[in-house]
Length: 162
Image 1 (cartoon, rainbow, N blue to C red):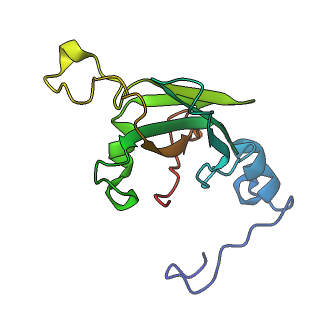
Image 2 (image 1 turned 30 degrees about the vertical axis):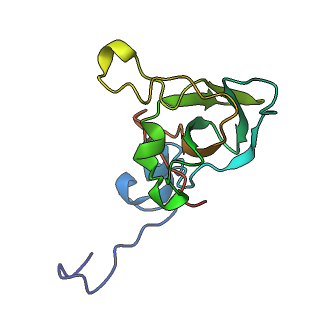
């Protein structure tokens, strides 16, 4: 920048000039390859409940994602009064039913509303097994396994929509 106030741009030539730091080729060599980060949330390419009549006391969800990530699911009784509008992401995730997906098909096998250790909670209602012959609605959500260039988690979450 020649005039000091931003009136004229700095020029960088590809590979000519007296100062190495003003050459595009030199700067590229110093930085190395730059990879853009994944900004897209995962989506389910398959999401289904296995035959509910096969087991009386568990719900099995089978899924695949369009990229590596983790799916979380929560089942609620159909007569509970809860609706899709009540099912926020943290409500699904706190049920603690999840599975990591990277390839193939993955399953989440649920046998109660929440995957809690009864000795760590004073809530008995969510540690009871599923009731036989009761209808349940299942809500699932996914987050990818993206990382930034330093290897730290940089997750993209699926939007909340049903």
